[in-house]
Length: 150
Image 1: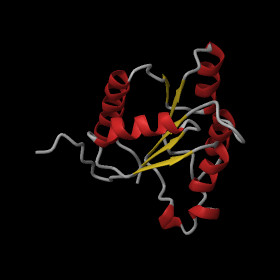
Image 2 (image 1 turned 90 degrees about the horizontal axis):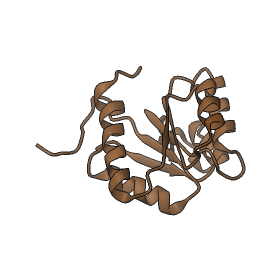
Image 3 (image 1 turned 120 degrees about the horizontal axis):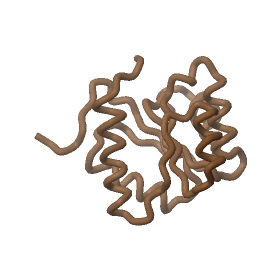
């Protein structure tokens, strides 16, 4: 049997992060352990376009609704806080779990993101090995352990 996690729903994972190196590292950290499709966007506006199937993400089959969003806070155009608030205010999107994954260590950011409806707050690991460990635990928890609505 493969060491990749297979899930019942195989819903995709969506990463919103403006740093191309971080996007690539997360992708590499996940590809060994996650069978789900993986999509990336580089700012909050692109995230909202993806979730609402607008622009380059139309029709809807180009941007399937994710089972989990990994969200950076400090992005251009629309930052992660604004995107989080918009997602949680939308009745069709608010059920999607959102894990904030950022370099911020500000207590205010932790408090604010939970107040806005984030499911978890994780500080970005500072090494590839630590990132792989975090992604392994994250994918096991969100795609194998918890039950998510269809």
